[in-house]
Length: 97
Ligand SMILES: [Zn+2]
Image 1 (cartoon, protein in one colour):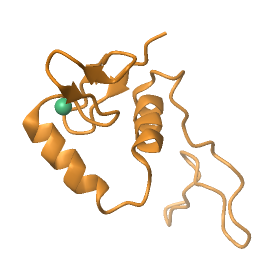
Image 2: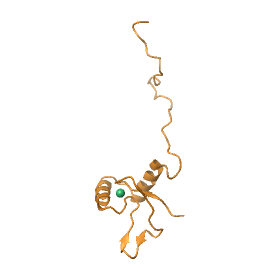
Image 3: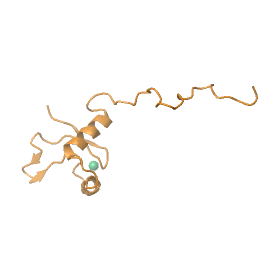
Image 4: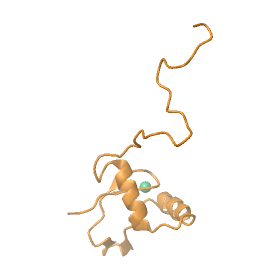
């Protein structure tokens, strides 16, 4: 099954060949950006600052776009020790009451 990728530059979805190469064009597909020159330069420059492999970043992008399953949201957990729980609607105190 071919993998769908998400461009980190334009957020577009693209479907490169399984070999990740375009033999007739002599080009190689990237897992993190589409073929647009602007996306290539922007993403390449951005990834220089994080020490994460492109495959891992591509996996994060697919997960965030909902391609690898439902998007995971942060669960409302217990408050950190010493902190109050999150306020609920109507729980605020007023000087009028
Ligand atoms: Zn793009």
